[in-house]
Length: 308
Image (cartoon, rainbow, N blue to C red):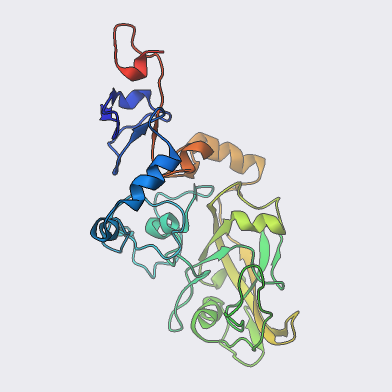
């Protein structure tokens, strides 16, 4: 049972919407006591030490909500090494996560912000397709991915700055080049003679892909779409003028694509869905507190949740 933090009435965990299995962190309020104005007034009375204690940090293990791009990970995937190339055991094509931080914890794509997982000395192991660069192209089975760098970071989402510098074949861009089964050529690029010999790269698509290709985008969050391999990379003139590095990817995975009828059927059989630690519906995600709903469940029980 759970108690309302204000009126101290008790509620069954099974009567919540959605039902809870474990006791969540933080205070809980019933619908009668849940009032945003009151809560905001209560927050103003908190002293600085109390507020500081509630701040999320890398050592905290509290539930993660919005604004998770720079949140610290409380756990890290230990099933495989961080430089592991190929599928993650137990993770199937079609599995999705609402937040990038949980994609990172799963080991599918470890950087919580960056789109390329790799370093200059080793081949890249995963990428995430999002809104992307103007030069990006997505055709489902194949796509063209633009490297990182070259942008003036002083811009904002509303007023983004155009690309100001040439991209270089260094760092993450170099890791993508190393994944291609061809010699590294930082002048013009290269193409693999046998593309299947290239290093496997896990590919995820974000819901932001819907801006350009809604037919391939997940409804929400980030979805794992399987193993792809880069078979060609070139240095080309970008839309804004400066040069960019473009990488050609082709899928090499036996599991069906998640947006196909076969992929949807397989996801249904495996019970794959969106991992969402905040709850199953939008209302439960709108605030960090669980709503303790009154609902008749037990005929002989006089608890508030069982009395209409």
